[in-house]
Image (cartoon, rainbow, N blue to C red; front, top):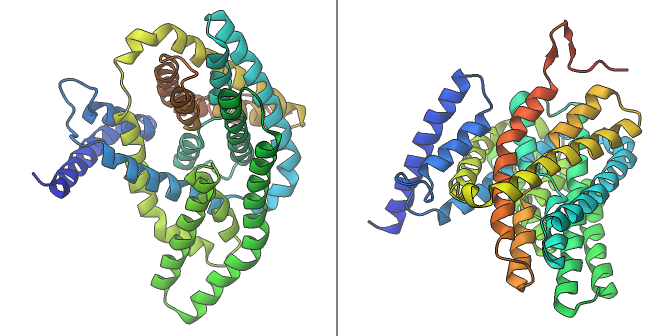
Amino acid sequence: MSFEIQVLTDLAVLMVVASAVAFIFYKLKQPLIIGYLIAGVIVGPFTTPFHLVQNVDFLSVFAEIGVVLLLFTIGLEFPVRYLRSIGRVVFGVSAIEITLMLVVSWAVGTFLGWGFYDTLFLGAALASSSTTIIAKVLGDMGKIKEISSTLMLGILVVEDVVVVILLALLQNVAIVHTISVVDSLWLIAKLVIFIGGTLVLGGFFVPKALDRVSQVANRELLYILMLGVCFLFAIMATQIGFSAGIGAFIIGVVIARSRHREDINREIGPFKIVFGAIFFVSMGALMDISQIATFWFPAAIITIVVIVTKLASCGFGTRLFRYDKTTSLRVGLGMGQIGEFAFIVAKAGQDLGVTSSFLLPIIGVATMITAFTTPYLIKFSYKPNPNNPTDYLYSQV
């Protein structure tokens, strides 16, 4: 069988199984993302005797496209008018969360008897949450425009920036056993230039360019140009150490100023759904559930620590800035998972030869568990009060 036919066959199997499992979860009124993850486990290469998909490598390509389109559309819906008002809150909550996560991670590493670098890389890996999972769950629930969702998305961007800087510092320490001030400052400068340049200069030129094209060309050319800009900024983000999804999110925020935002969002909506589903199925396919039996104890400790610490830090931080209990609870529960950056951090430590072989699979198992628990935690935060259906779990004060 040729490579092309094999890829088409695998994609057909993947979509059929995903649709069947997702339909069951829809009927059971459960989060579809869980159905996609389970479908991935079923077709993945690690699940004996299934492993229905023969070539898993191609899934990463579709998955990356799904992440870019998903976060781009989230950026289009991001309420720009809140950016200035929540900036202080986002940075404050992020500082509290990341600091506490690093301290607690060090305590966990010490408790488990891990070495110096294992503990350092664990802290950096757990410092960020999953933008993709949070955005998908909130989007499916129709809560993406809630103030708690806006706060979480802002915190997620700050987290990714901090983790990029932390990873660069750790790599310097691992290689030369010291921190290069020049390299660190240059990295920070690149991040500031990219984000600031995209929001300021991009915000001035890109929406106007799209509006101008819409006046002299047909819709087809407008959408092609828009997607071209989206993927261009996604690639630019990867060149300075960001994830492609974050680059797409930031330029989505910029394009949101265009008069044709709603048209653009509506046209690419089906592509976002399809590629987003493929991303979560591929994520499930790459989960080696056999590792749970080997690393269940440290993974369970890390999972509990992540959920509790992020609930406490993000919930307390949000409350500290005088948001009500409901918003604070939603932010705290919503952030309770390990992000995709954790794999990058753990893999970097492994490639440098400074971390133990067990670190990556343990983080992988913990990430797998939190990927399954997050939709239920977010759903729980919106649970109505049985004594008063008009109130949510905690009354606002």
